[in-house]
Image (cartoon, rainbow, N blue to C red; front, side, top):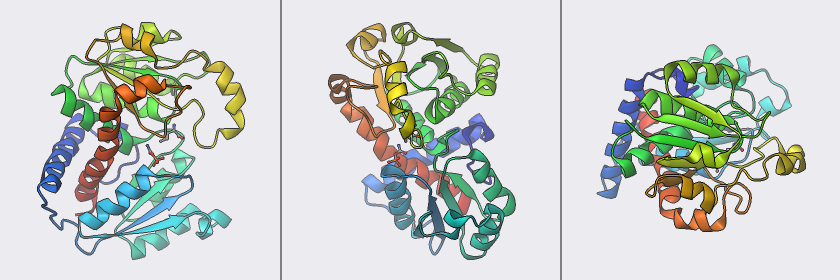
Length: 300
Ligand code: CP
Ligand code: NVA
């Protein structure tokens, strides 16, 4: 593992190895053990979009590992004024030990890795969100014990979350179903891959997708950068809501996950959200542990 650009780059074994280390780091932290795996290491964190969880979990994660994290906003970086990513990559590689980047285009993340000489971590693009899904997988295993035989159902936009979740599900042996409106399907190449490599179904009916699911997942109707499509999307996604009907179709002990931030009354009802708040906030906490594991794997 040299970078974390997208989940598809990782083998099943690499994913499980990150999850095992994440479990260990979580256990150690609960017992007050903070091993300085990254003593003196520096992580640059480029943010071209907003963030609560990603920024705070990476920053505190680096601190807990004995390293240091620099918050780099595109409002301050020359990259925001058009300095090419090729040049930024080569400059930052001379100062830092790793870069985390949240941006729009996947190509920008891939180019940082291509032109730089230090590990690059994708902290969300329009295409995928691998760090989130590592935390999601960790949470699922924590609650369900294992992946094999489970069914994960995603209700909503075939966005960055859906793209990464289907890869994570297939790689760990879970069946994956998605309910999305026509025209809002996940990446076409990933659909083909998932159909070949795993159990993948797609429908426009949330209750059908949720049938016998062990994990129900949802995300916002309009992602960052799509604010201008808000009204159009509100119409298109009407009914694509994790509510009591969707939950009734799922297994009685189904868990609910949400990457957050959540919009109650849109993609999830307040009732379902609160009934599953323990799982959802454990998932948010697990961002810290899963990313610390990624940092140790890449930067140590
Ligand atoms: N889930 C997630 O990535 O949250 P932030 O946008 O707050 O980082
Ligand atoms: N799909 C959402 C995920 C936020 C963590 C977005 O890209 O805004």
